Amino acid sequence: MAPSAVSPPSTATLHAPSKSLPISTSSPNNDDDVESKSALQAISCGATLPGIPTYPSFSAARKDMLAHMAGAFRVFARKDYTEGMSGHISLRDPQYPSCFWTNPLGRHFGLLRASDMILVDPLGRPIGGNMSRPANAAGFLIHAAVHEARPDVNAACHTHSPYGKAWSAFGRRLEMINQDVCYFYGAAQAVYEEFGGVVLKPEEGRRLAAALGAEGKGMVLRNHGLLTVGGTVDEAAYLFTLMERSAQCQLLVEAAAANGVEKVLVPEEAARFTFKMASDAEALYAEFQPDLEFEVELAGGRKEKLSKLVDMMMFVHRQFTS
Image 1 (tube, rainbow, N blue to C red):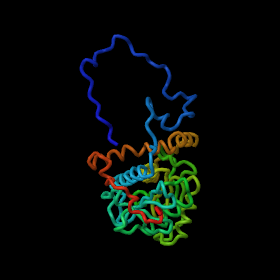
Image 2 (cartoon, one colour; image 1 turned 90 degrees about the vertical axis):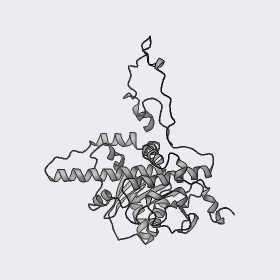
Image 3 (cartoon, helix red, strand yellow; image 1 turned 120 degrees about the horizontal axis):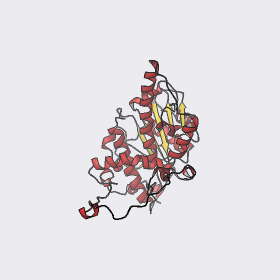
Image 4 (cartoon, rainbow, N blue to C red; image 1 turned 45 degrees about the vertical axis):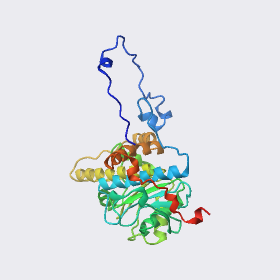
């Protein structure tokens, strides 16, 4: 994941060229064609950033996705989203989409590696991966309902992060008060307006999934915290970091507004345009890579440090291999 080293140019290449370089008079993003570009094309001045990778096999996909999942937990730990045993990420298995991977109950986010993850079936039974610890029962009910209701969702994140918990006390959507929060514009953001305590019944999970809706990317759970989803674990994790930071910014703005400072929202058309041009799956995958690459460096500079090089599916119950 770390960029390859590039040798510095020799001093001979630093002399001024004899001829002037050609200068383009057009903008990298002309107004007449910017909306025809993908989000990554629009934001890239020069070569386009790479987006979601493809894999030659389910095994290769699983290994890389679980390493990214472990990296997401490390990011969450660094950003102080831990709270005892609370919090979970789920990741749909690429080969067996009715099952998903999740973190073991009671292990700190900052210690997690791919080999720690547990594969659970649609009934919540651990069937693969790390069988030495249980999964989180409340987490399973939340994530199972979301994955069942939304076939497009391959990953979901929920933690008891501090600003998300604080903002959830209002039971309100985040407002479009800056460019970044516009990634949650319109139907991309929802509010779950009920709170019945710890989620220990399937009905609560189903109500929560219904509140997220068909297009929801992030949701405020009243008196509880935040939940985000994505087509990749990278997208869901980036959106969670963004939603948590947006909750922090909203609380700061609310405090200033309570003291008489006028609050100005992003105009509707600008918010809509920002969402359209910045929040597709490829761009949101790319948005998470800087944080993930930093975690790889902290882990020793190789992504394998986050994964333990084992084939996770060697532990899967024979019902999937017979």
